[in-house]
Image (cartoon, rainbow, N blue to C red; front, side, top):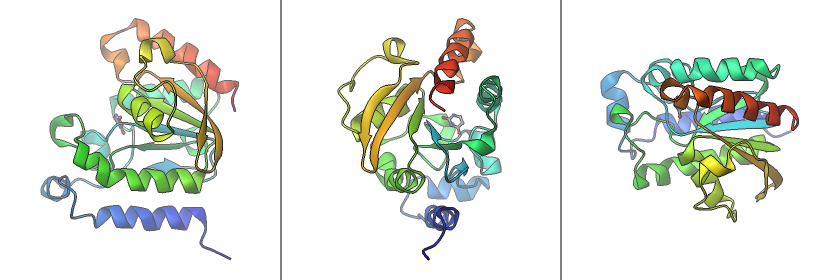
Length: 199
Ligand code: URA
């Protein structure tokens, strides 16, 4: 029998840890940060994809454990889910300095790992958190919504084809938007109800 999914994911994480070609590698070492590879159920039906780890995430080596993570936890709870029952990751596996936008060459280095995560986990539903992850998945799966606006597309399950088969892609606003736009809190809550119907 081949290695379990969990073991293969763990091996991939080890590869990211050694990725000294990354422009973010030295920054990680200098600050005592960790790789934030992703966590959850390797057999999850739902996979959440954010942009990049923030400081709290890099310190703990876990995705969405800062303020945005608390919002995500509440939203998951609102539809009866726990973190352990889904898989949560980001496009970038290392924190960019001062949370600046990921650069093209950084994305190019980390994306093969996200592709492998998708291939191993084979989620039936890919939930993108924020504009950046949404556009990335639209391009990656060559979806007709490329270039579309998150304001119009959020909360809608979109049919797409992943290399392993059909998937529903659900773009959501990033949980951090609720910090500066209070009305988005209700929108995110409502959009999560859509996820419930896809479980
Ligand atoms: N924002 C993200 O996009 N990802 C995290 O892991 C934390 C905050």
